[in-house]
Length: 391
Ligand SMILES: CC(C)(COP(=O)(O)OP(=O)(O)OC[C@H]1O[C@@H](n2cnc3c(N)ncnc32)[C@H](O)[C@@H]1OP(=O)(O)O)[C@@H](O)C(=O)NCCC(=O)NCCS
Image (cartoon, rainbow, N blue to C red; front, side):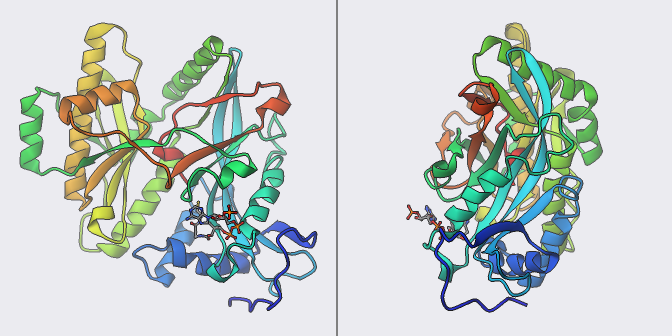
């Protein structure tokens, strides 16, 4: 049931407003409210089922909180939800001055005010309150009991969240078109690329999430912090993140295309070069919005020109395989965020005219850094700023 709201709404700066975790009933109410903005091609019932499916994944089971901005004097069931959002607890790495720490961070998502309440400052008040809550939220069992950083992905440009401390970070991507089997074969032969192998979910876990690989990521971050005065942070590119994205694509595929094969190919790699990537499929309202996103690249930094060439060619071959997978999954594009110089070289091999797009409005990665108060310096670098961290 959606609670009828008071005709006289409180001002956004009222001391009577409070941000609290939603009750289970309020969470469903929030889902119904924000379905208008976020349900895409799903009907309401299926959207609620999707949200319930996504909250039951290893990333979210104990780590997802739905927040509501309400009047502190009213009990649940009788209080009007003025604005709402969700936070996701995530594993992360922090490196500073050559030291590495395993920490947790929070990602904020699903920020929403219903249309008739907009422009009154409620979302702003909520984000301000959230900034304080997240300082210690779910940190009791951690070594650091104060939050070092948190992230969000703004769909409303770069200024709104910056007011509250979430500064915009690089938001670029390259989009490549889906290609047919024929174009795939011709493409590989034209530039003499290796043939990549496709990865199942299990392969991704083995090839991209093993202990050695996670340790290598930690070592790289630590090394970077020795060379830079700035602290380095990364959201851990772990299997929990990938599974959450896959749970999403599998849910859509099953509901929207029950007669098609499920999307079991979760990435591609070229073993002898150690280059891998994992992806997921995102279903929009039209086929042109259907996008296969590369969630994360995994590779060793090559040493010398021979290794560099092999790495770039492996990346190019994997991108081609992603384009073919996109075609087979009814996706119009392949998209990858903030490509590294090596990925850019790979793109140049395939599509010399492909453009690096700098987003100004949607999916802007934003990070709030609390390190200055914790003797970690004023500045931070966000490593592995890729799609897998999105929520
Ligand atoms: C974005 C949203 C949460 C703002 O809620 P709200 O309660 O109206 O927020 P506030 O009144 O505190 O602040 C509104 C500010 O957001 C800005 N804003 C809202 N929608 C915007 C958009 N699409 N692009 C840029 N800015 C936007 C307004 O311009 C306003 O800025 P101002 O204070 O400089 O005038 C609400 O419009 C909404 O739910 N939109 C649909 C879902 C959505 O896009 N959520 C954000 C995902 S990142």
